Image (cartoon, rainbow, N blue to C red; front, top):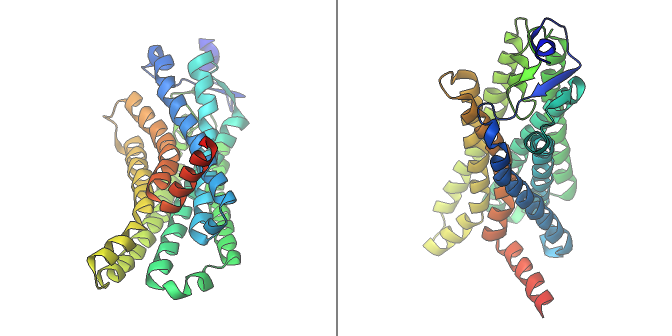
Length: 315
């Protein structure tokens, strides 16, 4: 077995995912919070989708974007966790080469989609607060659908070079990936070739694409804050700002751990490998778990609808 993993070969038919390197003995225990986060994400996001579908008053742009976010969160967490749990529970470490590239593609595609949807939600909040009388005239259903389609196409096209470049490299050192899933740079680092173009492209996506998303969100909220501070009373300012609270929490939960994880993977040579792998998994599991909780607690319409459903069933 060791010879097949370390001797010279080109483009192995399978990769071996090691899980959390250095913490193999604790895999079973680590799987408990991972499984709990995944279960909460599944229940929470399906609840959001159900509530929005059932409540006619929620059929507005803000909640359409929230449904897009919920679907993306479900797909994002599902793209990694089943395989991760199979490693933890059944020691099922092998993954087919093409399946690994497929997982890489969808994982990074859903991450970019989530970023794009957060930008769309920021734009919705900007229009709702800065141009309230034109909100529904600007963000009509066809416009919302077009924005959603643009987010999907952008993500799919920008992530495609990840896979095309990774597929062309020769892998002649080892097929062991010290990770729980086929993360882009974790796979590329196994190649026995000059892979700087893959690294540079990954940095381009992080700093230019994700960076532009953060810039557009910042611009939107700059305009939103200007509009809020121009309101005449403190109560009006607090009430208006409260409509942005859920979105701001979702932004912080997504971008801060993501930036930390990406930078430590490329530049944190002194960061222990098991810590980075844990952070990479937490980054992919925490936002899908937190987003439905944040919106369920902070959004009055969703909270009231959930309370109505539970009290109605109770009676």
